[in-house]
Each structure stands twice: as C-alpha cells, then as structure tokens.
Length: 341
Image (cartoon, rainbow, N blue to C red; front, side, top):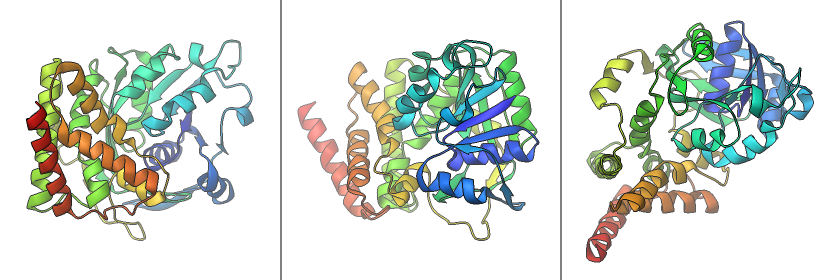
C-alpha cells in the first residue's frame, strides 16, 4: 500500500515519516512554505532516537499524481475546519482501473474530534477513524517533532461508524512496524469521544498557556465536567479514564528533544503559526452543539470556543490571556447562564 498523507503537519508528518522509515511508500500533501521546504529539503523528523530527513514525493493536491493507485490509502490529517476543502479536492480524483477515490479508496481520518468521519461518509464509501494519542509539534516549515518514547503514539483504529475489516488490520500492521501501537477496535467512536473530553483543554492552553497551576487546572476540570454531562445526556458512550490509562500505560512518554521547540498542543500550534483558524469549533464546539441539542448548558465551552476563534482570527499571540482574567470571564459566563437558565 502507498500512504498519501493529506496534511503533513505535526500528526500527518510524524506518521508519514515513521511509515517511510519503516519502508512504506509515502506521499506528503502540504501547501505554502511547508510544501516548499519539503520539496527543497525533505521532511525533517525529530524523535527521541535522533533526527532524520526523508526525501519523499510532496504535492499540493491530487493533480500532480495523475491517476491514483488502486492500493493507495488516503490519510486525512488536516484540521477539522479544513476537512471539507480536502474532501472536495480528493473525492473525485481518478483511480487507475476506473472510478474515483471516493468510490474505491480507503480514507483514514487521523484527526481530533468526531466530525470529520461524518463529513467523510458523505463522500467516501470506506472511512476509518483514529483516536490519536501522539504528542507532536509543527511550527517550522519542513520540520516535525514527536517526543514520545518508547512508542511514538497509540492510534486506535476502526471503521466509521463502527466495525473492523481486513484493510484496518493491514493499516494497523504497517503502523505497528513504524513505532506505533495501533489496536483495531470495533467501537472507535468510544475512544474518540474520550479523547474529545481531553482536547477540551486545547483552547484554554492556546489562549492562556499550559494548563498547570491550581487556577488553570480547576478551570479545565469545570470545562471537562460540562463535556461529561453533555455526553451523558446524549447517551454517548466513551472510554473511561481508567481504560485509557490501561491502554496507554507508559508507552508514550514525552521527553525533551534537542533543537525541538517546547510548546503546546495542536490549537496552540495553530496560533503560533498564525494560520488564521483553530479547531475549537469542532472540540469545544462539539460539546456546545450537543448541549444545545440535549438541553444542557455549556457556558464554559461556549466561552472557550468564542475566545479561541477570536485569537485565531485576530492572530493574537498564543498564551497571552492571563489565566486569572480567563477564570473571571468564565465565572461571569456561568453566572449569566444561571440567570437565564
């Protein structure tokens, strides 16, 4: 199989580089300065074992590849807000022997949140979801860092909406050869919703810095409690914290990397790169949506969704809102919600 990594950033670039290191065929899809750097210098992947450069085909879309191969696996690793544009670009791409990518090829959603799988099923017949546990960083064109050891990540994989098949097991086998653990599960959504609860702190981290210290940790606990209440009201099952800890163990422990920036998660990185967008609409916004559908107030997630969006649109510096100020805003939002409840 050949892996076409659509969005070769932190997660996509790490998976692509590790697969290439394991001897698999890989094509990277990127844009702008990142694509220029990949084309000129290759992908530089920094991991605890050292830094390596991979000279891989790099394109900006399906056009330069001509007909796609029947054994291609499309790996969608863009942020959720960029999913529709990526699906538009790739769904109609022709495949050797007839048909289109949407009709014939597997599409693996290597993304946070739960919305991309649903969006993909509107276009692609064979969609796979992944619960991504992979600490990685992309803030410099052409360079991706993944600090996890002894494994690079744990990637639970399954069909969307549920089930498994031989393709999932073949993809998992390739990932397991590439420094990942990749359990194939029939209920990948349970794992993704559990991860969603964890990523509700991404917006907090992006606007106010690391979630550390009593004030930030207490605020995150309140934000997560809203999420748990919403999932309970919606009847959405998710893996427990105990099951997550048992699955992760000490398999993916981040360590400092020489020359690699120390920073935050995916939303923080979007602000640092000045992309102009952030995925909060599909993380905190997913909880807001479910809350509105099921009659559960979500003032804290609404607040984080709004502030993160404003930070991205105005290109405000990551971490520049003091935690104390954010907590005060959260208290006012909760008070207003109680008054109008």
